[in-house]
Image (cartoon, rainbow, N blue to C red; front, side, top):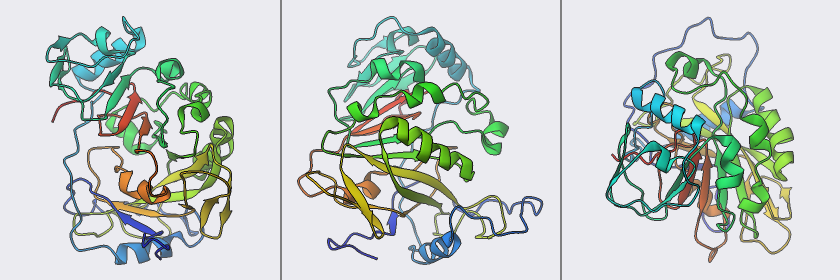
Length: 339
């Protein structure tokens, strides 16, 4: 269904990775006797959206994230735990830096190609920035002068796949307390911003975000969007089985901050002056998966939430990896690795 400006409120297709075929069929042991879905009618909604996808989905080159299991990943983890030599922002030039020189500093782009000892070649795109630091130091290190129009978080929730791969530490929940204390209202645009947190299909996780984390941040909960994971031909990566535990989607809990408004039907709408227009309660974002745990870029899905003439888009990604144009990426693996 399209809104008055022609935007599709239900489905947005964004460029993704290059998965050619669906995942291997899941075990019958991981099924439930009752229907298992995040919210009533979600399977029907997802089935309708998958049926509208084109036969070929767009792709982009997604940078390979830092792997915590490698020597480089271990070196970065030690440096982040230790802390850096300086907290002043840095615009890298074409030279080699130690990890101590880049930890706890906002690296600002665009940059020439530069090297980081024990890691390798890095580069920052125009308008891109990274902060390689532990979550406990983000509040002190993130610049308050830059008003973000969108803040997205991808916390390391415990999951079977992440535990099997060992790609990042999901065993500790020590990140929850400092994340709740992050001054999201002061980091977000004063005229209104979208806030979104990736969650698992565990209902308790989504409830914690909507009722505990958003409340601590002063964020108004709007609804849940879903990343529909597709093979390159548009087919779901897993069967649309109402009884299966594993689903071909990942939820994104969405809210707004620094803007008065209310949910009116299928979308939140502002009540006063705001650059925000309508934020859908439910939206599907379809793309092909890339590297493990990498989420789709949300720029195209977020653009219709802002009025024409709004200030330039500026995003803040928490627990992110890599570097992207117009985004500041903060995390303990946030290094702008060169392709």
